Length: 158
Image 1 (cartoon, rainbow, N blue to C red):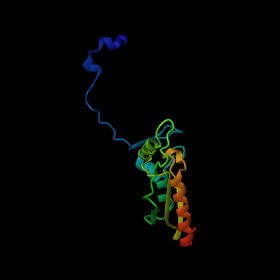
Image 2 (cartoon, rainbow, N blue to C red):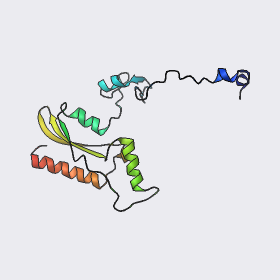
Image 3 (cartoon, rainbow, N blue to C red):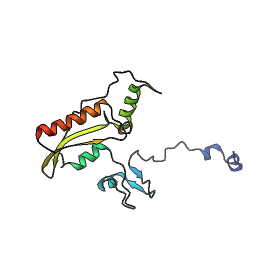
Image 4 (spheres, rainbow, N blue to C red):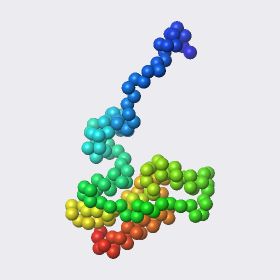
């Protein structure tokens, strides 16, 4: 405790009044130039810092939604989820890793596959979600990729 803290009464040092806390997620700090950016402005600028041009990470779903024409996409095999048939365990249970990845990413799996149109041309596209276990490839990722390729082949689209 410093000499100043010893002299100040405790009611002056600590305030229990909430000083207008800023809601979470409204502001984003640029890792490159340290500018504090308004989330809505950053979204309008496609996650590129208007001050320094730094391209910030966007998720797979946001990337695919930006790629396809507006409101003209559909997710393929959204119901597929990872399981743990081998009851795998290393430093922690695989089931726990899956739960943690779903919570961290908001996605059921590391790969998102969608069909939609780009400038009126129908196609299929997939993207990895890095925040889901680093985009690691499990059995469901392989299955979703193959199903997306088969859908494209059967529909005669790229």
